[in-house]
Amino acid sequence: MKMYSKGIILLIFVVLMISESSGSGLSQYANVKNAMNQIHINSLYPKNKNGQTYGSAIYATSLETKPDLILAIGVDGAEGYLLKKDMEGELPNTPEEAIAMQNNRSPDGYDIPLYDKDGETVIGVFHVGGE
Image (cartoon, rainbow, N blue to C red; front, top):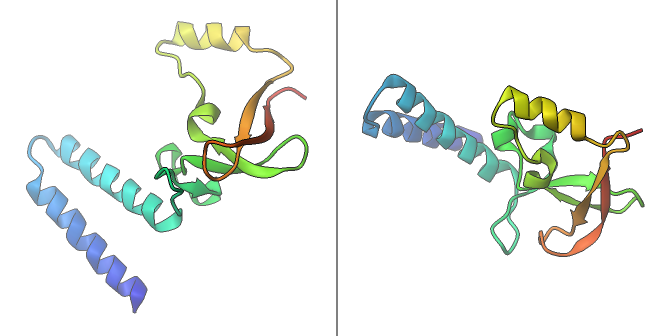
């Protein structure tokens, strides 16, 4: 019964978003997609005191639906969370920037902080890349 109610609420919300949107069909699609991503995130992940979502990224259907803090195991075996923005890193703006970034990466990888679920307290290190 609970899932049925959520489905109806979602359907009503999507219909309202489409009917209230103005502009092109592409703009309406983007509005609906963003709204559905937000519903997905809010229904799957709890929030910490800072309003950040946290949990496993296994249920994420896209980069946009990953939680703010992603569950991970640090180099010393500690369980904690990675900031999504740390995992994404800096994104290139052009193909040339992408090639330059790739060429400048260390073959040994790099470390990023591993946080407690509060998203503030560093409890370890997570290693990205390398061997």
